[in-house]
Length: 271
Ligand SMILES: [Fe+2]
Ligand SMILES: [Fe+2]
Image 1 (cartoon, rainbow, N blue to C red):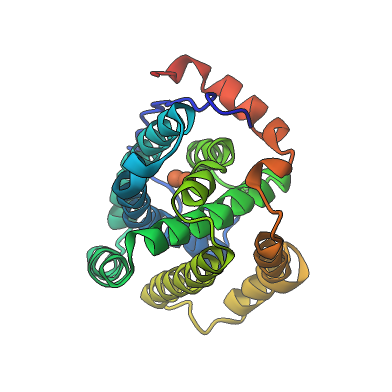
Image 2 (cartoon, helix red, strand yellow):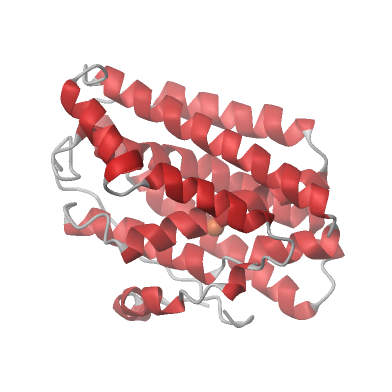
């Protein structure tokens, strides 16, 4: 990705229609895994924005400063659009506010306060690495093909922009604190945080559905993580890719995956 090419788009989704509770191919597990990401994203993205803003004055080039500003605009828009989906979950009868409060408290009052600015930007870079590669896997495998079109559009637009801005937090980290051990701490905390939050939210939503201990839930979990989509093994390889001292997000040639999606959203450019 060439610097200077991050575009702020405003898709302005509306979710007035009714969706089936298990909107992803009738699978409670797969649906709630994606729902859990929707619950996590806004708190996570606000944390990314604060982490980048806190060190923005230490970024060494105008080019990266301008990329970081576009990154912030994109992440604000992601939060806005995913928060709109909260009303769908509430209409479906899910109690999500306590979960949102716990996530927000843990992120803003524990994680962020406990770590220094350098570590927060490192954790942000780690989480951005995970989201960009999840985005890559999801678009490559058309993971949401069984979802309603509007939900596909929400996740695919977000995934494409995660790919588009995948190098920003990493480059900011390198300007602020290029030490390898700082990068390592960031990715370890990022993995712990992401898997804990996604796991707790998915379990909670399944519990609300009384689907937690069903055979089908276990089968879908096994299929997604170990046998079909193999997310567990991909997560391990994503982790090790980041440990390579020569790693840089731009080394993966994935911009082709986003072309059709950005063409669809072209009229929505605002910056
Ligand atoms: Fe995002
Ligand atoms: Fe992002």
